[in-house]
Image (tube, rainbow, N blue to C red):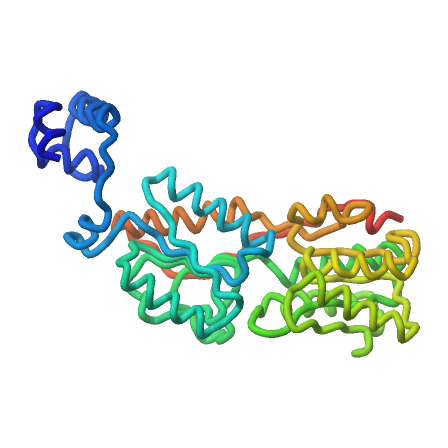
Length: 327
């Protein structure tokens, strides 16, 4: 920084203000300093800076399954958006493990991250109360917890829309396939499906529910294989993720059942899998771009010291129709 100051004809303090975008300096001085930085390929030492300020230009991002297309798309948009604002991201994959999540949280705190974006199994970490933190995609399991910023889709409405689409196509024997475990969104989407069935006075029996251990193409395919061997053939299938829908489609194809001629099928997420699955998968669209944008905005506002109230933000969902529910 001393060398940059000498080359730019200014003080070290001014160089520091330009690099950190903090304090007063003229546009001319900023341009001169930045040109010297570019010409000399200067890179700030973030580790040293973090020791001095107790914070780094780094955001922690905790994700439950980076192989899930919905989560990978969300993380990609967050990372890109934070990079444009001068921040890098440390991405931690928990594999849906609460124990691993806690270890990642401890590691991120030790690295003095400036903020956190959590797609969490636990949903809430009290130790981040004073750190800019956004909880994304998954609501709290404990509805009594109202602290922090929570951004997620209207999952109940999504389950409702997907099931209404099947009902509109004339389906009466609807199978619901979801995953249980720590993802409460799966249960909320199921509740939305039940609301649609009740509204149309269509009876639902427990033997028309496939409850998977986790979101997986392979497990969805295997469980559907076993279901079909019981000679139970639904006329419509509502799934709670596009990933599950792909496994269901593969199983139906092996059994010689055609989508949508024999069975109509819906997914949830509207990720790239929906476009490439069979004839094209009708899917509930989550606005991933808006979700990521809001998370970034809240983090940046809190980093600047702006007052941001805690609250829950539910983003609307829509249905993207494709050939899998054609009628």
